[in-house]
Length: 107
View 1: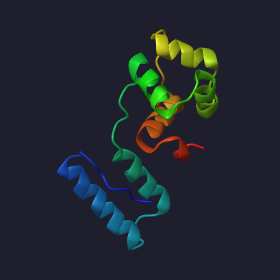
View 2: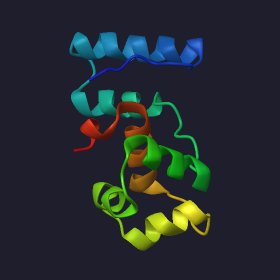
View 3: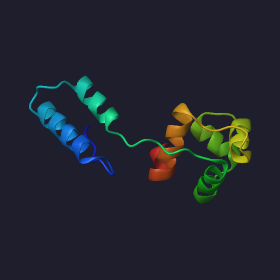
View 4: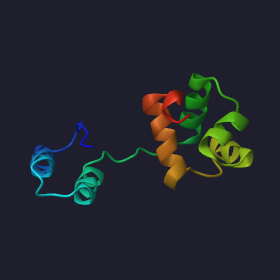
């Protein structure tokens, strides 16, 4: 449930640790703890055309396979890679997950 924080402020770390302890002791329910976890997540960096192409090359995926993994269209991936569009929402989070954990985390 609780994940270690990286690069966050010491105050935020202390708040999250306190909330985790309160959850462990039964004073905070699971739903409230998820809210604390979400507040303490690192922001997702933007992915530009070059970074998306480099990620796809690193994972050795075609545009069509990356589109299938992200549940988006091939034309969307193509537009990301030429810079006409930028990923957002779930696609951005999945790209970040692929970048950090690899293909096995998504499939």
